[in-house]
Length: 110
Image: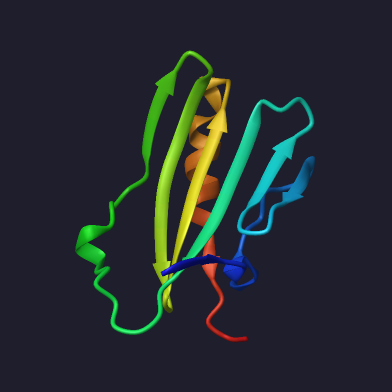
């Protein structure tokens, strides 16, 4: 398993107003006032995978701390695990964070 640039195979629509920070092994989307940060990374799985659906968490979890809230979740597709963390300062953004996570899909072709 390795972290890779497999994000190109994922459909991610943050909507307008986000700048992209492209790290070698992850991508961050940050809105203008930095109140929402979306972190995405892909773990690529090769060979016989010991990672089955039952060992991955189901629904994303939302936790709060002194800086706001975080939605943490994973999605699995075609030898990849997408790791997603959406940090947000306003609790009213909880619904939007869930909708964004649920809208992320994997492109089977190409």
